[in-house]
Length: 225
Image (tube, rainbow, N blue to C red; front, side, top):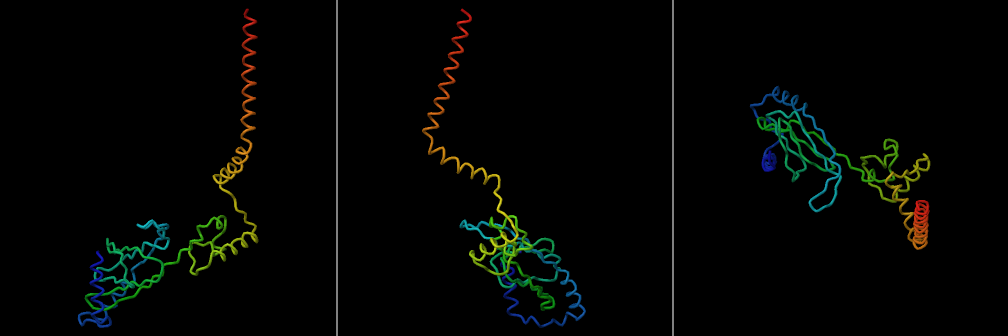
């Protein structure tokens, strides 16, 4: 279902009195519609890291699915968004960002709003990806949890997470790759500083080996003669 269709429907809602009930709809019909609308289920899935066309990365997008939508019911989303609904088998899917959204179930036949369903998409906590959160139980320390409602500064995060690590005796363990990198970082400066001595040392070792090989060959020839 394309965005144009929903935009036209939104304009229609603005022109009609949503509290007006068509005489063709009895209270029993309205009640039955409400029972059907109550079966609508709204779920969402965090899309993780999303790379935009300009190359920027965002973490605040969710794929929201509304299922079990009755045939005679339209869905109006508030506030409006530029995203399109994808419709399939009485199910609507749309990508929405963190925040509060309203799914308004509207009956065209009865010309009335049946139900308003509030949806709150959580705020992703970018600090949960920080290496300082590795090894920390996010259920016990909220500043490392995947979702966190309030904003806080980098300074506050570092101060509190380091204090939490100290109190709970949680060390920062290097990954195998990091350990290898750290070893090479330590060795390379040493090799660079003493490279002349290393070259001379290797040259002496090579000379000794060549000399031993030559001596062995001469001894072997002497025995054969």
